Image 1: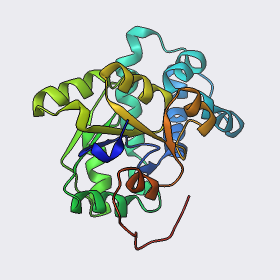
Image 2: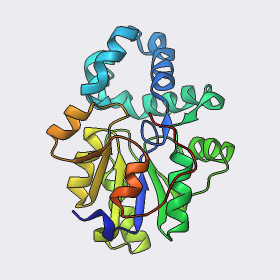
Image 3: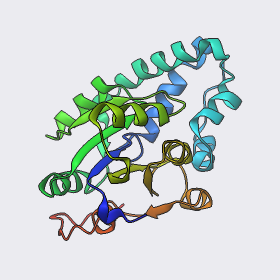
Length: 220
């Protein structure tokens, strides 16, 4: 993979652009009584860096297949209760601005809802070219549909996400990916999936060969 040939940059949202891990599990716990599973504890959250959300739900919540679609909708509704507390990771806005100045197409493919993501981005005065909601359990279909709709050359696309399930979706869709290490899955877990990782948002620009000095010096 040569990231410097990429001009269509697609991001995951939760755990990649936005620091929402605590909010996601607060929302998950908010549905515990309704779906009859035990709330997750702080100790269990710390152990989750090596798991994917699909595996977690199947083992912890034991949601039957026929309830998964409705559960996903309810989880998104619960998430909206905390929308005003969502923060972006340091330097993310600057990275997105730099990509725009470089003439890159910037988009988001996420299992979160388009409306929720749009509201959060507006709060930070950020706009992107598109926001697509994918299934909670796989993004390959959404990525393929997006490429077909806009006639994107997949060799020009770079997806940026934080989970092994993102890696699997990109491999299935034949799309190159960078994995960020500040999200849900640990760096060691991501590297086991044989994927290139970045440790700080500014390294996304460096990987793309963009010679831009961010105004901020914050790091995660």
